[in-house]
Length: 335
Image (cartoon, rainbow, N blue to C red; front, top):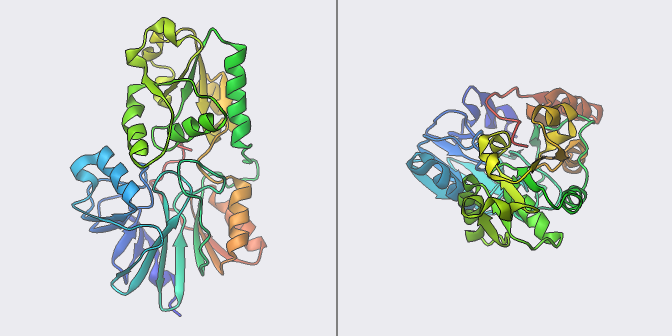
């Protein structure tokens, strides 16, 4: 059997497959890239050829235009592709629309690169699919036992309860433009909130893309098209950067909220002057990470971008070989 290190190895540009001659989520322009999802720390501009799910290619085109790759090849979940003798398959990662794990296999050795992932249900993207493998390359954004995210429904219930408690205030919710905004909208609709929800202009293009991919987000309106008085008692979604911007002056007595896995850290909520922290993450928490490694039970685990050492220690305690890849260039904030 081929040694895992000969099939995939860390390089300054990111994970590289020598026999296939391609990178996975490279952090600098390369000739051939497989991209797991559309967040900017994984999907970079300037590559020669890009392979990704159709939704991820659409997201990259929306964000980067002509810089999204000179050649773009879509690969649906479950389809197989031979790249110079390496079998490549994409499987759902459950992170955001279009997000994928990358399974690479040659000469009896299969490595699965998780990209960013989560295990809890998300109405805006397919659920994570466990793929048996010899080596699992796992993210580790929230890989500490202190990170145990509450149920999403409980956090949405907190938001709705606050809106009932302060009906005169405009609730201003900070959300990331790709994934978090659409997931929160869908969770609100699932919870029975059917009133119009108002958007900062920076969120509209990505919401429109999700709708084109069949994701129902309910009635959305632009803040810019609405009188200030009409926003009292309403919910406004905006990028996190807008929470402390003078843009908020157009809102009546805004109550700042923020949806992120990092809202479980009180200091982070205080730094952003957040009155209503909502712990809603698009990344696996400690229990999801450890349950996934237990379920897959690979011979070896490679850990990247996050709290690497804790997950390495956990895996070794379960009798698995494990190591930290120490890749650089991946952002933990958009969680």
